[in-house]
Image 1 (cartoon, helix red, strand yellow):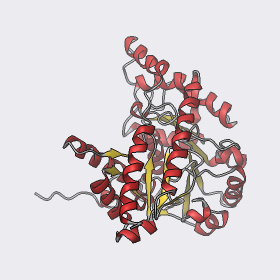
Image 2: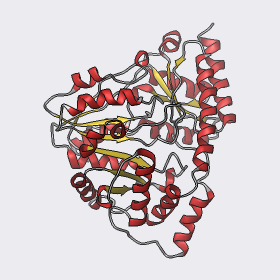
Image 3: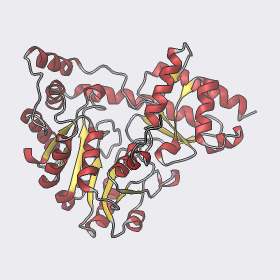
Image 4: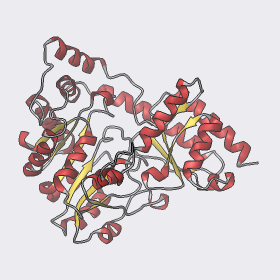
Length: 398
């Protein structure tokens, strides 16, 4: 029987990063030797003091529903984090805790966008942004910034993308997939444009704030342009910085009225985030942060190795990143030499002939690229780069 589904769901596609990860897992289950570089998931265990907080919550019987928008203890930890790290002041009524930052962003789209409203999403972008906008009946508008611009849009591009229908601007810095981060001066230039359009709400996805190594330090958009505070939702979470992907805790701070609307959306979908995870996230944000610095040091070493290795391959170019645990490589010359029609074919070739799974750049709005996650061990990365290098040296350089 062919059961029809809604037009809404037909507008969107499954996450390509999840698809690559699942495909690699299936091949491994079949006994194939595959190295998966698709998933954006740290290989580190959750730090012991954070895990212990989860165990203690279970032992104490803290295993029931909580308030939809999060427990006060975690909200206070988030407020302290925003004040300490970003110079932002929020009250409890301005904080929402969700089951991951993905749900936070989905809540924002659903609470804000009406049919036909436009959301500006700089490309390359995280794969889920456009689809979440479309699920909310909005229209994604995606100005593109290539390698020559360091994968960062200019103030002029932003201004050109704005129309009377623009309702939302989504900014991810440091960026998944490129690793690029906007400087304070670049953020101020974007902010100057946004100040001229008071109807636009800004969502800043700062998930990779702590995985960052530029001397200037991380800056969030509203920290750089405080006048945007009344209409900015600052989004973050504990998944990446604290190796807590499976704990599923994201959070945001923003205008009280919009946070209340987002909480209403959440109340009719998942209700509260996990009570146990909320206790652990409280300890993560309030506790010793040396574990974050230690993981960041390892990510930087892996970044340096992968970027150097990619740039030594025939037909491949890769800019250094300023954060995240991704390398985003231009493979257009290698594709042409191999006769690949698109980056999907190139990724399929790597998977079948080299046993390495990567995510095609087209899923991020950047055809002719591939994203490599270096959230795995250095030993794994060395084996993966050796395999890719052997294939390209034999077939591209020949």
